[in-house]
Amino acid sequence: MYYLPTTIIFITYSILTLIYSLKNRQIKKKNHIFINEILLAALFLVAGVLFPFLYQSQSPDLSRNSLNYMWLFTSTILILELGIWVVMLGYNGRISKKNPEIMAERDYKKFCEEFDKNWVDDLRSEAGRKLLHLFACFVIFFFWTLGLILEDIGILPQWGLDNYSFSYWLTITVGFGFVIMVQIGDLARLNKFYLLPKWSKRWYKSMRQEEQFTFVASTPLVLSFIPFLFAPFPIFGAVVLITTGADAVACIIGKKYGKYSLRKNSNKTIEGFIAGGVSTFLIVIIILTLYHPWMPVSISKIFIMASVATILFLMVDRFVRNISDNILNPLMTGFGIWIILFL
Image (cartoon, rainbow, N blue to C red; front, side, top):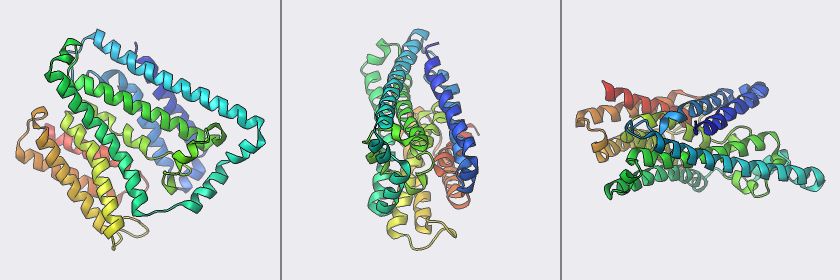
């Protein structure tokens, strides 16, 4: 039952996100972000429901004792993090209400006006945002490599763990901790900005202009990876790298070399579109070949998986308008590759 605190936290986040979205549904629908917020609430629910099964998804021989320790560690970390945030928000709310100057300084409307005035949509700014997404990818592959090393030298077996359970334990704990931090910040920003500390202004200066009145893209991006923890690691790794790497390549190439718009009233370009497709194909080929021992399939099947992932990636970019590609890209490409694996 040590998984219960984490499950409850994520289900609570799902409910709070849903309540906020439904409460503001008219303006959300007008700005074409209502579906994304409902999907985000659903992803939180999925994360909470699936959490009790994630650590043993690829490690069926994992002992109950080891599993309990892992659940306890993750839940303890997340409870402590959430507790720190609650105390910080409470403190800032108290001092803001007692001091009209602080309350005026932390007015969200004023913040948005300053944000719009200083907003720069150039290659350098976009590259910085994409690097943050790529950092998540780096963390996942680092934990996997660390697990391999510790398993090879015999440390993990002494703890009753294997590479999968250990690397996923670290990945999930860090990923869930990140999501808890970002989402509580977003809920405060969108509802009562004065609860956030002064330094949070610097934090939110890096968000995209269209994220001012909705949740930042990092949260659904991370949550969309969760179903693929049940797939072999090469699929999980490919999904993560497609969502962060291929998207980054498409965006950067489009910003620097793009001349032809992909579709009317879109900031996406044909050049970026092609670069994203090529990157997706190469990522699947490279990752599935490099990590072949953990999913031994034929070269022909790898090429089919790469082709399917590329087609789905391009379809999302070309035809989907009002649903975030940070949600659809991992889900579509990931399930596409996974389905081919079973054929």
